Image (cartoon, rainbow, N blue to C red):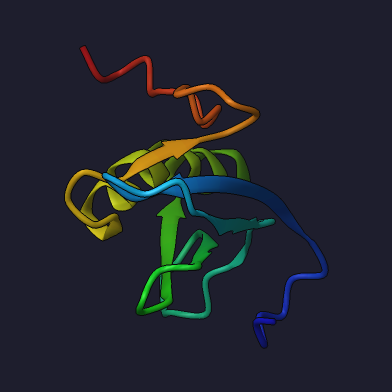
Length: 108
């Protein structure tokens, strides 16, 4: 569990299957509700945590308001998962390849 100061995180549990294996591993993604960024001149930030790979992932995503910070974290999760997952791994949520994190309308 994170020592993050926000009171809540939205949590999604994905399933990962490695190529050539029937074993399923849980990958837990948490996007914490945004908080004020303590950096001078900072706006808002949302912490994204991913557990279940060899090395846990944790990073803040910033925005000028709470919604932008939260969406930046959500929209980036699929790219982070692609970097963290072993080659040939399959990630699913509710049995589907769409992991349900949405995409930015600013990305063509």
